[in-house]
Image 1 (cartoon, rainbow, N blue to C red):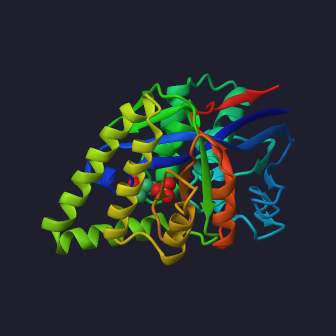
Image 2: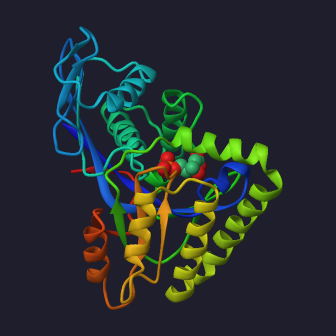
Length: 316
Ligand code: PMV
């Protein structure tokens, strides 16, 4: 059996504005997805088994589905299997990354499956080819949507700066708190919403994007030098501008303000497309327990993540 794993991600700065060409900064986190491939003569099957992905199994040859829980994953994984003409095998998936929450779960599944298949079938793909195939597959399944950020972070790990291209950037590890609203989000409809707003009010929305781009640029040296207080301020600015662009929700903003309670986060913002999903908070040096409690009290699911984590890897 061949197993590969790949990380999820958070966007630290610049979501939405990046769609219009300004910079965004994302980082791989220490939540991962695993894909294992084993021989299964005459079969082509995908199975999932854990809490994050509802249990299901699917036989691509007979079309036999045993549970309807995680069809989303089936679409991505079967696109990988079809693209590389896989046969006589079974893919087993496991993930600790919440789905449809802006944490890069589909990219991690695609990248881990590609890396395992690469080894199993001897495809000879290097990391760059895994990242670009994964991006292509995400775009195909999502019908044209999907920036290369998620698949690049899942493949290469660390931090990636995205504008017209995706470039790795060397920044130190940090700890963040993630607050999940437990509401799934839909990236496509949030991007569409912002686009509509911009077509009606370009003179207002374009300066919002420019300011977000300026925040992303300023944040990089602050993160490099671990000037956390100022970095937190950049997160707060960024959240305010995303609210102005209409992609926050009452639940997201409640978690953001709860995290910023006295003794809590140095800064907090929604992460990803918004409309549900997650927010992130930057803890002070002293730790994150006050933030975890505040988010839980505001009815969010709170957990700590590390940033700058390792990209795709084969597991022994
Ligand atoms: O899909 P998410 O929640 O990770 O966020 C996508 C980020 C956007 O900037 C809103 C869209 C994009 O393609 O960059």
